[in-house]
Length: 419
Ligand code: AMP
Ligand code: GLY
Image 1 (tube, rainbow, N blue to C red):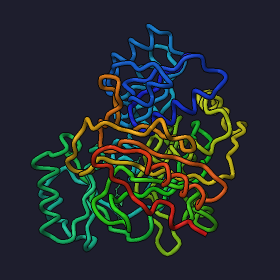
Image 2: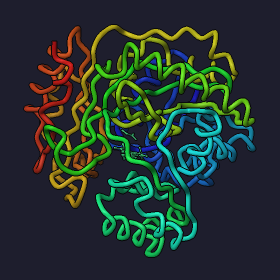
Image 3: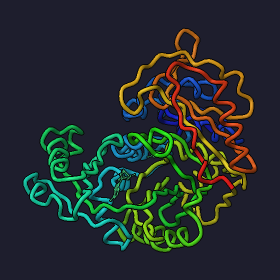
């Protein structure tokens, strides 16, 4: 089988790594990929958003299965286009991807199907939004409706900040058309947790849990990032909370997509806020999380391609899915300055000396035969071991062997799970 993976981050490197272990797969292409992915797959110089070019490539090379990493092509309908041409592709179609692509669509879905979430209202008229500033008190959560590369959620502490946020999103269109509509939400304080699930239109099967560290610096300080590290399983998503999440969210989700005629096939990422032992849904993403994927797929024992085929054929219910009991840790090495301004093109040294960890590349590229940094999140160093302590020890030992100018990482990933 010939497989095409779309995307260029650590998530996609992990997908390529896992797919390459499948005995069914003869050849993997990745568009556009990165330097690390280039060691396992043939890189194709097409952007993840260029649906028509990707489609011509897949037709020309007779790709048997396309796996989509990032959200933008999903929301823009890559799955519908590939299916129209008779190609097999893994991910939700355009309608279903609205669960990530429109906050208002997702909130409406949750409310109609009794999935616990924060109270909200949606606005296309800016004056109405302004006159509702503070309706749920402060802090006030303001969200651009559409995709905004993870930057479209603003927690305003007071009236002035709320006004600034509304001006930025709705008047100045900082996030373009994503700001035509906004959602205003009640603020819930609590602990965040997330879970990835396989969904085949009928059946929803959660994967092992992982906890993501979103803040840039140790002790959850600094700005929000795409994720600075993960460990699995999560010490938060278990027991009573896990059971409540399954009964109050996963089950109603599966019933909801059927009731709405949404043939949702792919990955569902559910972001929860847990307060007083009650999980509420903050968001849905319609794809694998990055860097959750790095630890979760490291623990998957079953052939991922087999699971994907079961999903595409609607037989997830009967699919055996096995997980390792080992614990996994992923620490992200970022560029100095990330998530704000950072430099690219710094030579990365020491990768060849890493024997025990797996290093998944996020933002790297080849330049004159050398691997250099090419993004904010550069590498993800991953270890699975019998205990979190052991995994952390190896990860941090190996991180010392990798060097690039401005290397920045958190030293407390998985600390919360230490025995
Ligand atoms: P979202 O993309 O909707 O998950 O929002 C991004 C981040 O904003 C979340 O991971 C939370 O940290 C925060 N957030 C979103 N909605 C709320 C809310 N209703 N209450 C508190 N924090 C929130
Ligand atoms: N790590 C969070 C995300 O992938 O959205």
